[in-house]
Length: 342
Image (cartoon, rainbow, N blue to C red; front, side):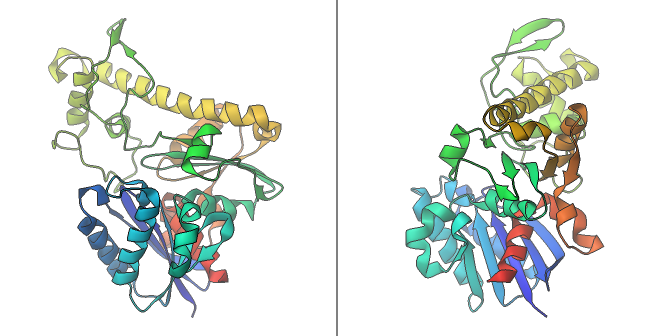
């Protein structure tokens, strides 16, 4: 039996997917915070490896090299590769380098720029093999990838975080991390537009927790104040953004504020889609393929705008037990399946 484990090593979560003869049979993810110390990364790799099981081959993609734990991205790629190779010594390991394919550790010095934050391309490459055209949208905990696919090929102009941001193919808008008020200076509350407190009192996770948008078991990011991940505590954190306490307004008013922030966030993503459509007219009629823990929001947007929608996990051969998680952890599943070819 041919076994390969795909890894997606992020700055907030680490994900792993096990493929047996081209079928995903297990998926797991762990919180991972390398900016708090590289021991956190080592522990996450060990825990995930124990859960997912041993395999002779491993395929790795990453975004954690962006962490401020590292002096620069190239150093981050090298450090993550060294840690990973140490933790899984004896196994055959390849690193995903985007359009360059998979490379060995010895090639990382010259391929570091291609390896850095290339996980989006692995997922998009898998989708392109199944779709003549599509708009692939992967909404994760921190970012949203927006990738046009045409003629069964990736039609993106960017190949790095910097160029993808410039071309509208990457938005720092995720389900858990980031500030609720990103992009706005005021919000409607109690019948008035009010300026917002420019402090880190809440995260976008508080917004989506209030609205019930976070899938069970995936609320992995710590709260900013160390208090519970309850709806009431989340409302209290949002209250501070308008200079108030939880008791100063009704639950319905706090929920309305949360809906405003969620709408603003989705509007930022929609703006990027409009930018893509302005350069590639096929985007308007392309079906949407959603992935990531926020794909339910992507599906909702597709329905509101009259677009056909498909979920990433439709394209992933997986056991029933692993099917749903495959959509949450698209890059890890993608590199596990693509690596079956090296």
